[in-house]
Image (cartoon, rainbow, N blue to C red; front, side, top):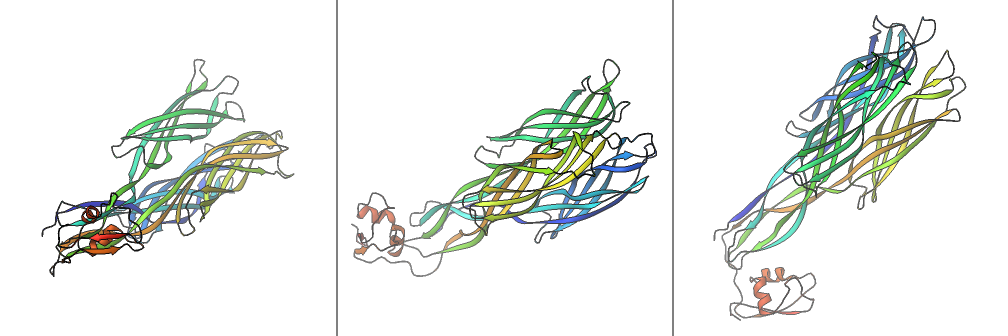
Length: 520
C-alpha cells in the first residue's frame, strides 16, 4: 500500500541565550585652546550607542561609540562662568553566548553603569567608568512534520491541535522628525548650545492586516548659554511622530514589542528678522524595531494505523519555546536628593539627566519582579553669585512587579525599561525627583513535544479481524480511537453499529458491539 504524506515545515525562533559584559572606560582629553581653563566639573552627560554587532562562534562582537558632554566652571576670569566641551571615543567588546553562530539573530544594547570625570590639570580631564553591554541571541529552528495523509481508504489517523509560538521576524522602520523652534523674546538669544537631547515617549503601536502603525512623541530638550550672559536657559519642544509601515506578514492578532532608538540628531541656529539668533531648525531620526509574535495552531497527527496493513510511525522530540505572557506596565520612581550644608541652596532647576537600567529580575508565581536603578544628575541655579551653578547626582533604586498569570519560578524572562518622563522640583531646600518608568516583561518556558515525521508500511502479517462480533465493556481512559485500533476496525464502523451520535462521548461500563469479518 502506498501512503501519500502531506508535510509541513515548522519554523520558529527560540532564545538561545543572553549575557552581558562590562567595558572599562578610561580616557584623557585636552581642553581645546579656544576655551578657558577648567575650575570645577559640573555635569558629565554620556551617551553610548552600538554601531555594529556580529556573531562569531559562541560570541557576539560589538562595536560602538560614546559621546561625552562635559559642563564645567571656568577658571582665571573676573567671575565664574560655565562652558561645555564635547568628546567622543569608540569601544568594542565580546559577549560569550554558548552555541551562538553567525547565521543567528542578535539583539544588543548598552548603557552607562557608572561614569565620572575628574580634573587632571586646568587643561586636561580624565573620564573613567564602566559601560555595560547586553546581548540576546535567537536560534531559528526548522523541522518537517507530517501534517496530513492523503485519502487512503484503509489508513486511519488521529489529529490533535497544538499551538506553536512563532516570532515572525523583526520589522525595522525609521521615523524622521523636524521642528522649527523660536526662542521667545523674554529669553536671551543664543550664544552657544550646551546640551541637545531627544527623548521618545507616549509610544503607541498598532498592528493591522499587512501593516504596523507607529505613533509617538519626541520631547526635544535644549540648554543654551545666552548672549553676553553666563546664564543657562532651557527650551522644551514636543514633536508628534507617526508612520505606517507595510509588512505582509503582520496581522492584528499578533503580540508585539517595539524598541525606539535615537539614531541621529542635528540642529542649525539661525537669525530671526531682527538679526538675533532665536531660531533653531531641528532634524532627527528614530530607528524602530518591532518584534511580532503569534501562536500558530497546528493539527498534529498523533496516531496512525490501518485495519489491513501493518504501519510504522517515526516520531521525534522537539523542544519548543512557549510564551506564557507579556506585559507593558508603568512604575512610579520617587526620590529626594538631600543637600548638605556645604552645598549651595537651589533656587531654580536648570536641567536633569536621567537614565534607567535593570539590576535584577526574578520570575515568581504569577509575577515577575524587576529591580532597577535610575541614575539622576540635576544642574541647578543658586542665589550664591560665586557658585551660581551646582550639580548633584543620585542613584534611586526602584522595584516593579508585573503580573503574568501562570508564570512559574523555573521559567525565563526578558525585561526592558525606558524612561517615560521625569519631573524635578525644589522642596524645602532639597530636590524632589518623580519619574515614570515603562517596564516591558515577557515570560517564556520550554516544552518538549513529539511530532510525527514519517509513516510507512512494513513487512509482516497483516492485522486480522475476528470472524464474529465482540462485546466490549468501556474502561476508564478508553476512547473510540483506542478501541477501534485494538480491534482493527474504524471509529466510523463502531459508531455506525452502536448508533453513537458523538464519537467523542462514550461512558465507562458502556457495552459496545465490535464488528468482526461478519458484516452487520
